[in-house]
Image 1 (tube, helix red, strand yellow):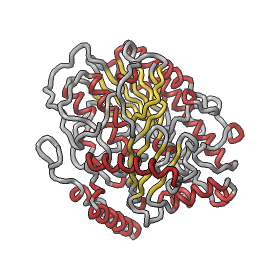
Image 2: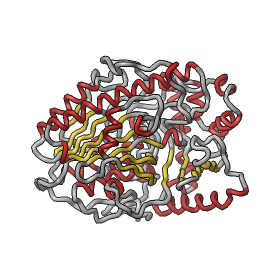
Image 3: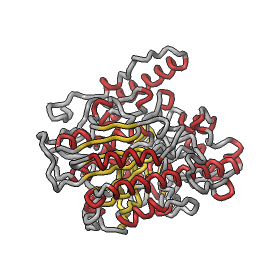
Image 4: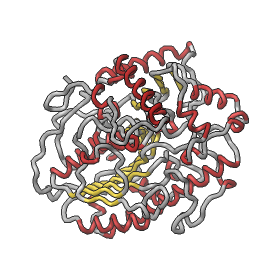
Length: 499
């Protein structure tokens, strides 16, 4: 069911938490899709995450709302889509939320929870998230250093020092670029190019791409070791049985047709829930679930009623093995990660088909150019022209579509899970296309997507072009902020609802 877009949770008086309220451990990894053993990946070794899935519920079709870090994180923390909360690009490029929306730590803190953050937040403004404890030591947990043992030690200190229910978000740096083959002795047995194949959504193959895949898998194996140590610390604290553990990736891997796209390689993630006595062990659910569902899940876990509706639904009934009514359609979006990457999209999928609506089809997709030209160290494993030329015809055509997308793309995920064949012009699928488009536009209208207004879309495109030119000339000052934070936000009433 679609709901009002902006909400305010019921006012929660500050009071000691009830003894029966459980704790919540939210584990987030960077830049990885479901390339794990428990999801059937044939190359990687992830025994700890496989065990977590066996002890709880694994969601086979889990998605983020936006395939870049800040927009994704703001979404699962606030329970709002990026076009609702305002965080439509990376915090490092000054994108921000429209205002300080209620979020997981702010709500739980008012309930008496002790709240903590290990690793990065990467959402603006940071003041919206009132964590009691924050730790982000660059020499231990950063793009250059991945000391997962130290991360687990700090988490263990937090567990043991919490005399009341807690919420702790632990954010690992793996598998973000650079792809570090081995650090601090992990993984113990790194993979090499000859052990693997490129991730399937890339489509191309070469020794170079296989080396990238090998080091990506090495990051995942180090991540798995870190999560294993983290869960050991939770067990040693004696709080394992009273803690809901949620594990997710923040979006897909940074390979071509992955991160920063609306393709499956960017949006699809791993998601596992474990809660002894509440989540049935060994459960696998095939429903379409989203990180937009995490805040409602935490609210139900904490026994907190919400007077206003949320776009998402609690995952607990599914994880408990209950037969519940669930969504038929899943939605996601894309705007940018920095000014020069502006290419807004909206997408919807059902059990079989997926539609991508490109809002500015007159533009070339700059994300394709970044990967193809390998601009910067983070795009080192972009696909080279000669690798694309050596790929099968349907893969070459997919790269052409990615570079210059039509207004609408349509994919049959049952027969083409990595979206190499755009079927939008197939007459036999016209009804499917119309149905998905109706659902997407109804979703956008009911949640009041500001880019439904052509004026807003033109203004946002012009602002991105203007900022990109100023940045290229070195004329964009450190104190300047995005004007969209004002013109895309319609007036709201006292409960945060748009008037």
